Image (cartoon, rainbow, N blue to C red; front, side, top):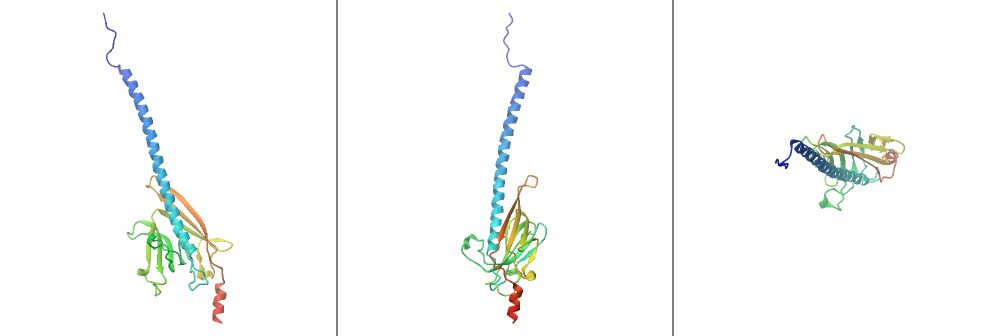
Length: 223
């Protein structure tokens, strides 16, 4: 009598089992990969917003500390339009960004721009300062303190409101006046070249300066 019991599996059964296992494994891998990608992107977005807000806070603080045109120092605001790499310089009395010097206030000339760091290769948002109370002599290059703020900033733009129009550049000496507000725009980019995240940050800073007629002041001083 022939025994009808089988030992093992047929080739078709093995192929079906392997196909089902492959489908389940692929689904599990896709789920885990999607979760990991989402976590990486969330961390990257968090880093991006932290960098953007911190850089914007520093620029805003310097602008809010800009000197009154009626003080001993004219604000000397000069805004340069250079495409995605604008620059701005002015006199301010804001706190230094060094956390060990919280509460200190310095009378200084500050310049914000995007340029190469000391290695000559890395491009970063830079803050250049020279203290006026400790460097009253002629401004020399070695008197300037250059502080790299964020290498993730890939664009910096300023616009200036003169009371009626937004301008791409400004010179308070030539115009004999100060803008009433400055618009600051940053583009921050984080991540590898082929999988990066980018975000635009924009704010408008109203300058705490009473508008005066510089020309009238100078004419009055000559009389």
